[in-house]
Length: 288
Image (tube, rainbow, N blue to C red; front, side, top):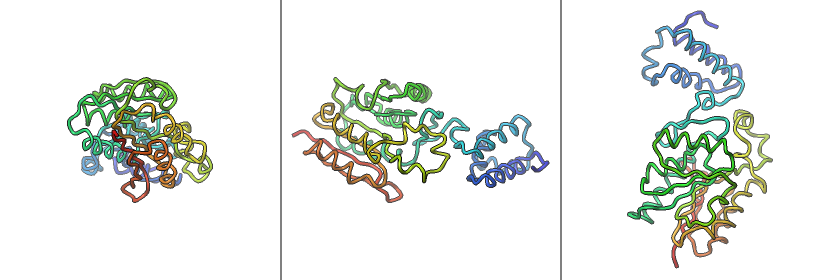
């Protein structure tokens, strides 16, 4: 390890440690920015300045965790989603850009279907960190948002994010759509577990070793929760409604068919993400 205590020196050491462990070295720069509370531009300006002992210790402790495979977001305890910082712990999945596309796609469709309607009842099934529910509520304040999760620990994280970001949301604990029974919903969004357990061996240990498996994997080649949603949502949706789910890149046809059967008169489409992969299925239900 280099003897200098400048930001440049400890950053170089951090990158070297991550590279030796087979990890992404750029994470060292992102983490140092977080430790010092600086933007990238500010860090570049201050690279020759010394870093205090407490900050150095915190930095190298975090580097050691990342070298062992802990994701950067679990080390910092936060991740950005649609321009807002969300608290994340190992009890919830780390929000990802693909899920941002699901929310933005839902907001665009809701704006077209209900351009002026207030009081839209929206549910986020399997909320995790609350990223979907909180973002929808803040972008569409006139909506009445409820978030569910089977994990009480996840609900605690989601509730904390809602409070920190000023989003008024109701939280219900339970499996999939079960807590939503007895009410009609205009919009239902979900990013359910959808990875085939058979694919686990080929995944990074930063994911399989640290993110909650209950939020990652699903039986029936990853389709189990879509079958549950397709079976339960017809009794819960309003006459005019919108369902949006995130999917695996090879599940588009199967999930689309599940919702076509469940909602024969609906318009069901598979939507690709920014990388050109099938990533979302939207089901627009129209009053007959």
